[in-house]
Image (cartoon, rainbow, N blue to C red):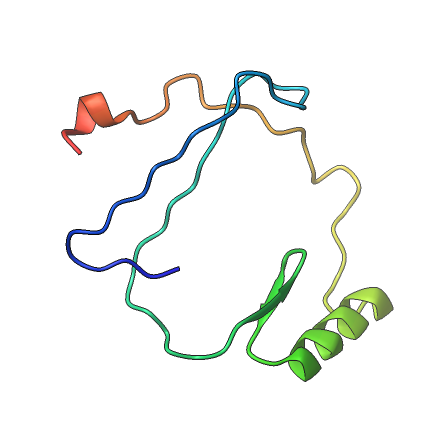
Length: 89
């Protein structure tokens, strides 16, 4: 989704969330539009379906490397997140 001058984004959560965490986290990134097609599946984002298929095959075959079992940790929310009231956004 691309926004231009004067566009805005509203983010809202339902009162009851189907989740183990009560908090809602949102990540909004900015930058110039890439002007290219985008195909996505799970964490994989490529330009074509063929590239996406190749990335999935590479992942499933182990060609993208491995993550040691003790390298992952549960997500821990930031106790002091940046809030718009503190940034002037």
